[in-house]
Image 1 (cartoon, rainbow, N blue to C red):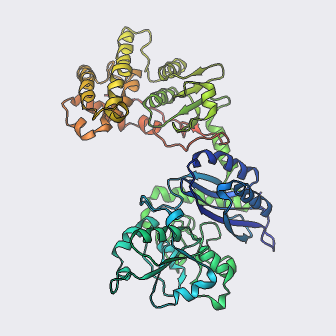
Image 2: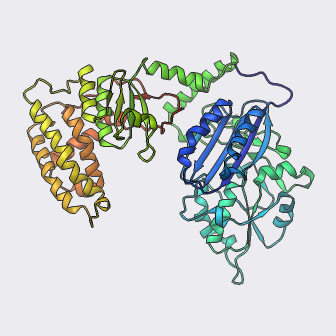
Image 3: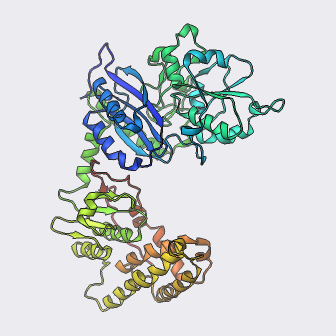
Length: 550
């Protein structure tokens, strides 16, 4: 049930970040998420090799417990946070995400840990930005600037923070005068973007670069309104939408489609539909997407009238329970691996639903290694045994159910079918690896192995000249077992592959890549970790038919 509102705000929101070298950030995710969930804390935390960035909310004791948990790690001992309170939960879920950057700029070599500009305390900010030779830059997105900024600040009109480097190169306001580049003061919501932006500026030759310590939120917290140079409200990325001086909740409302604050007079526009669209985003969604949003809004209103949660774990778990049968097999997989792909193809066409555990090859989970010490995907954990060879998984799945007639077992062609797949797995795969990854084998390039692999491709093309598929006029397990490897070969240099004379093979591959079964098995899953809630493969109810026909 959704808690009733109280006169005193009961939900504490804590925003924090820290740039710090974090080479083992991948290993930190599972334990951090489990600790947050154990304390009923919700929000979002990003981990990357350059540090941590997060906003979390919950009961004050629980939020402080998470902060204490982080600070017990010497890496995060200097972590600072900003607090505010709300009457209602600012977040509906808890997410700990792994990112390349905790704030995405997309420029290699930018390190706020070593290159950030000079911190300016909120108490000293007014004096700095009032000096005539200082260029003041708002580093936030355009829709954030629209509802509030500092007096006299330049708005670069950014759609995303990654556009800032290009703007800096072209900005007239940043051009040198009398051979000297101007002093620059930069600011953002919580301080993280301006730390990275000042590091960028220093790489561009700007020596006098300053940024507001703690960001706008710290400024609004400590500077009285009658002494403030801030105009408007400050957008925040949670259910409060905006805050004002003293970090009190603002007046802005959010469009649930584009997740940006509603423009002025938006509700009076014929393009505004509650929970569906606003004048800014109406033209950017299809009617199908709008209809889905209408249904979501309807369910939200029903849940609100019943004082229950529409968004969150219970609803998600009901869906998972419906998709996953009791004692479902567990599949450890890696999306791009051709061995794992062929196993998923057979499981999908057989109608066997599994608990999907997508892994990273660099950080294989202990539970997978305990089930299969060889440590390669795919691994299918059944109630009575473990299958850790892709072909074993394929044949097991088809022995359970074979609605499309993929199996060749008991047919005269079965021996030839197995021979064709063995050649793929042995000879062709060896040449494929050396062609695709020549550096692993101390080769100058993989062209000799590419040429050697062509013998097998010519063999497949010749076979496909006799029939639509490798074993006849319908798709079989042989096609499914070989196609992922041919796809990997073709993607190494698609232009070269498409220029070859094996027309039948090329048509066969394109048909596979454009099929619904390929689209389904290539669904992107989040990386699994031990405390993660189950996810189902296939991701939704199976289609009625995944047949590939000539």
